[in-house]
Image 1 (spheres, helix red, strand yellow):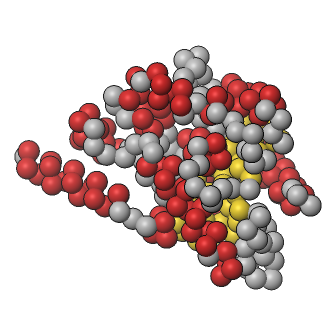
Image 2 (spheres, helix red, strand yellow):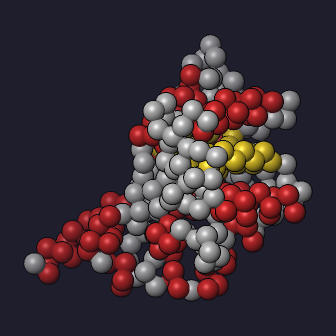
Image 3 (cartoon, helix red, strand yellow):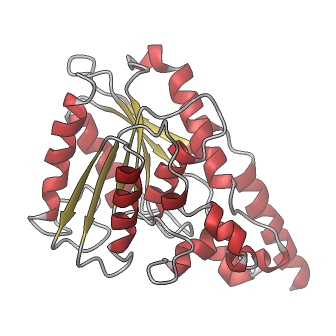
Length: 273
């Protein structure tokens, strides 16, 4: 039994670590007749433990496509349900920060380097993410270690703080940092987005709902305040209703929260015009 467990563990780790950026991205090119030249890397949520590839992945990409926007859904590295079942992260193995940051950096590099083949304007390449994917979206702007940076970012009902005990989403923090590092105060602070807004942060489109039962709405308020304090152009929309996890769905959320898609399209089509 012990040998089988080790084999499963090594297989999971090996299969996750060595995928290329192209392997992790599912491309949804815009139709040439309607292509706006805009590209969006989509980061589904899932507490850094799994991915919601339907409402926050495929449906988002198809909606963007319908509006002439190239989409690339990113399956970034996460802890995985197996990490909790097998317990291998207790001994320091498995996916954790900075794996997911590396993946979004690689995705940006790929889209920039293949922009011509997709008809993409390299001044209009952004990242959009949901929940924990919203945290990763902001890290692509605040913690990026490469020259391939997003020109806009769109965190939707995002996890923001990993340090403020009043508002932290514990599962996402554990998913990002791992079993032991989740208790490391310095690590918590280093990945709390509200504490690390750079002067050159790109424009931000931010949405959340007050009745969010998963990620406390104050996460977005912390981000809004930090962006305002650092004079970063941004649009913040706070809905009263809609909850969490609605993505681009036409059936989840509320009529009020579903307005975010039209608001985004108006914002992005007018950005830098």
